[in-house]
Each structure stands twice: as C-alpha cells, then as structure tokens.
Image 1 (cartoon, rainbow, N blue to C red):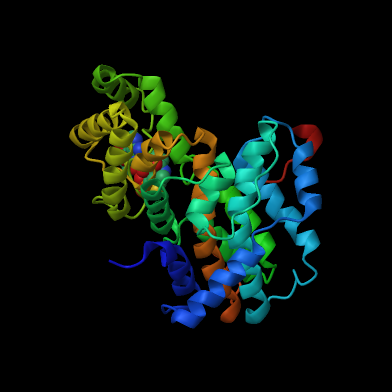
Image 2 (image 1 turned 60 degrees about the vertical axis):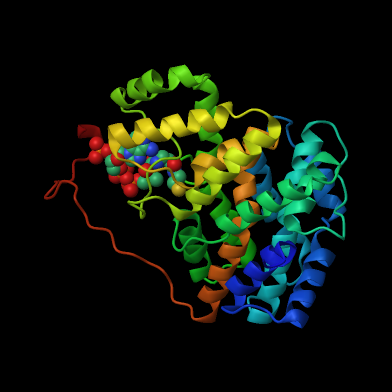
Length: 337
Ligand SMILES: CC(C)(COP(=O)(O)OP(=O)(O)OC[C@H]1O[C@@H](n2cnc3c(N)ncnc32)[C@H](O)[C@@H]1OP(=O)(O)O)[C@@H](O)C(=O)NCCC(=O)NCCS
C-alpha cells in the first residue's frame, strides 16, 4: 500500500511534470509547498475587511487576484518562475480558504502546521485541531480525485486566459470564476442544499419526481462527457457511507442512494463527482459553502498544470462563432425605431 501522506504531492508533481517524482524530487516539492503556505499579512488584513456574508469561493477568487500584487515576478511566465508561482498558489489555497472561514466567524486564522500534508493541514487550519487519521486520509483521496479533469469549464477558462500570455494569477482567478457556477464546481454545495431541502428518506421519491416534472435539474447528476458512472463517484460513494457510519448518521448517505436510484429509473442519469462528495464533506462537519473552495484547493494543481503546458507551447485560443441570427437587416435611424 503506498504511503498516502505523500500521495497528494506525488499527484501534483505528476500533473506538472508528466512523471512521478523520485524521493529527492518529492522531498524538494514537499519542502517548497511547506515553505509557501503562509499569506502576506496585507492579504489577511484585507480579508478581515470583507463582508462576513461574502461567499468563500468569491473570497478565494479575490484573494488570488490580490496575491499578484505581492509577487514581484508575477508577470514572468517562464517555466522556472511559473513552477514557483504554481507551488505558491497550491500551497496558499488551503490557507486562504481556512482563514476565510475563521475570519467570518470572528476567529483568528490558524497558522499551517509544518508536519501535515495539504489535506490534513486544511482540516487543521479550519478547526484548530488535527483531524483523525482516517478522516484526513479520506479527505486526501477526495483532493486527489478532484485534481485534474481534462478540459472542464474552469480548466478551459484558465487555458484561454493563459493563451493570451496573461499571467498565472489572471488565469487562475478566471478559472475560479468558472468553477463557482452551479453547473460546474458549485454543484457540490447545491447537492447538499437539495438533500437538506428533501429532509428525509421517505420524501426522496416524490421530491425528485416533482422536481423533474418541473424541469428542475438535480445537482450532482449528469456529465458533459461521462455517459456512464463517473469513476470518481464510485470512490466518493464509499466515503459518504464510511463517514456517515463513523458519525453514526447514515441518513444523508441513504438519502443519496435513494436519489441515485430514482434518477437512474426516471432519467437514466448517473451521479458525478459532486454528488457523494457533498454528503462526505457534510459528515466531516464542513460548512456547505466551503465545498466548492475545497474543489479549488485540489483543482489548482490541474489548472496550473494546464497553464504550464499552455505557456510551454502557446497558441492563442480563439474559436469562431457560427452566426445564427437574422440576416439582411436594414439599418433604421434611431429616431425611426
Ligand atoms: C453537467 C451538465 C451541465 C452536463 O450537461 P450536458 O451534457 O450538456 O447535458 P444536457 O444538459 O444536454 O442534458 C441532457 C438531458 O439530461 C437532462 N439532465 C442533465 N443533467 C440533469 C440533471 N442533473 N437533472 C435533471 N436532468 C438533467 C437535461 O435536462 C437534458 O434533458 P432533455 O434532453 O430532456 O432536455 C448537466 O448534467 C447538469 O446540469 N448537471 C447538474 C449540475 C452538476 O452536477 N454539475 C457538475 C458536473 S461534474
């Protein structure tokens, strides 16, 4: 069994370098990530000015944009500097999200613990106490499962921005904006909102049927590419079950299973990555609006990997549009319209 405490860093290295690291490379990456997870004091001060009700994904987007001001090499998109920027962003994302949550609750941010990996450190900074080993391991695998996924909407956005040779901060800021939408990374929060709205196992069947009859989309189902089960959902289903059992509350898992059954019967749709991650995080006691920022904490490795690739062999991304509007219109002066 591989040592999972290194797994996230190994995956990050793999995404950025197209191969797994040797021990020395892994150790260098771990040290660099550890050394980079702090935030400029100015950013923390600024975050304390944000409205308490600001959505954490918007706080993250704004924070990344602000980080650019404190990086004198922000505009340098050479591979050497870009890798350093990617390391810093990957290390800083968990710190930002955990700090955002603590600040809005009137608490001081918790400094990162040098001994923990990214997943465990995030839970530690969020709660101020170290997570149980199994929980940290499950959370670590959740991050691995979300790390990269080809040209999804946010990664495509990052590529488009990087393709103009704008810098990494600009590309990542735009990617977070794309991720935040409910049809993409915002789906996980909405899955849990739906489960809470349904409220009880006995309500699932009628709720889903009614929602579908009203042409309402059920979050966490369907996928632009997968027309079979999203392989990530297979693992997350198991984690939802396990975290429910560990918390002595399998209600959300059982409700999720029932939603799955009804959706398959009624629409032939499979759950995607967001469906079971919702109840898994809920059972970890994580606030609903942190689910999408958690997606970003993982996906930053994929985004930056794609941005590095884009810079390595760049071409402006400029698709053509097919005009389908009215033709042969005659100009009418404004006074006559
Ligand atoms: C992910 C998603 C945007 C993919 O969209 P897509 O590939 O363009 O699929 P379409 O929107 O064309 O859907 C095809 C059909 O399934 C239906 N459908 C797709 N996802 C659905 C859902 N989650 N709930 C209900 N119906 C859904 C569509 O309404 C459409 O039905 P129709 O042919 O009767 O109009 C879509 O499945 C969705 O909105 N899912 C919910 C949001 C979500 O979980 N996003 C995270 C993705 S990882």
